[in-house]
Length: 309
Ligand code: MN
Image 1 (cartoon, rainbow, N blue to C red):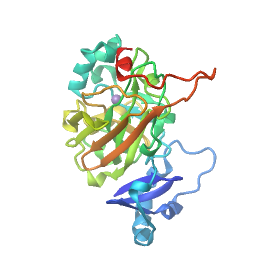
Image 2: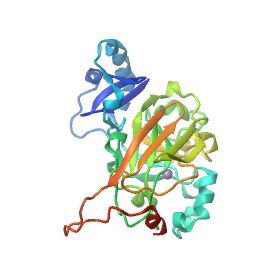
Image 3: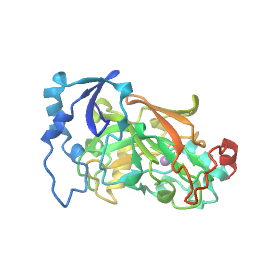
């Protein structure tokens, strides 16, 4: 099943080029009161919601998918976890390129040495919202990643059991400002985590370790790999993450990016694809139109200028 969130936070069942508006299925969710739970209510109750969708879908309104503004399929994750340097070829390109490593020694360490990092939940958007770039004077890069959405509470689970804790998969973009600061800081501006175009339930992807993934920038392919090249697979990442904190329904694990990262600037259009999930187009703009003094920001920052800084 492919579930999207669209428009003013409506729930959609994706079927080919159309989407069924199954928002009415959300009525099965419990009513929450303060204090709100630290997990995503939709993902925590996904089985019940899916059962209701099956009952109402054929009588639900049908809409054209391409006319819808897609939001992140997870609205309220408790945390966004990300894997650094989880593809050997990306580790090599970072270690050999001073613009990527920015002189930061930790950028040539392996994932076993550096572990995982967290991104601010406020960085999360859907593909229809686009990416607003902060700090245009610095290099901003695209990173395409398989994103895992956790389906149930997972504490210290083994890799053998780990995939039972997955609700589904999406395409993730881990947008990054290059530099010396901690990853969580450079990768957490608003809109720097894109999740979409929808959630594909885990039953449709029994082996997340055999998926082609790619990204093109303005029509030119930049990253093109397969999740079989991940250093730590999905199961190992869940084992590692859940050995340091409890995973909750709706928690997102972005599994790391392959080689081929490159700079993005306002006006760019990103197209990201992962096998068995789909494709999404994401537009890039400047986050801020003007500086506080009313002085316009240089919008025509060239790719070359972004490269050298
Ligand atoms: Mn990344």
